[in-house]
Image (cartoon, rainbow, N blue to C red; front, side, top):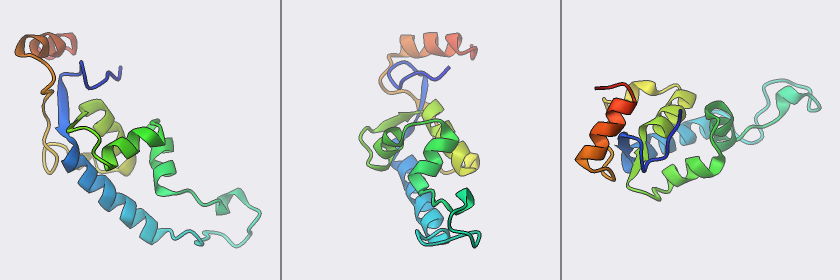
Length: 123
């Protein structure tokens, strides 16, 4: 179950996640310019251009707006579940705990954090 960042016990700093999402988007766009065609027939669905944000949205199951909230760092922290969905869509799950820190949700009190961790089966 995906919970919002108000109740999920773990989160990531949005600036760290945003940095890697932006790098991924730049790489995606460089490898697939708008006029790029994989196949020769222009009427084929295989030739339909899929932008970086639309690709991430379709692969992660998130709305483009949710991904933009990360890119534009609209909050200091992002729930771990949302970060996980984005990183999995990017095939960069390796960044968690290496380049992107997983931290306790700063919006939770210690008591609520402990309760949420128990609810998640972690204690």
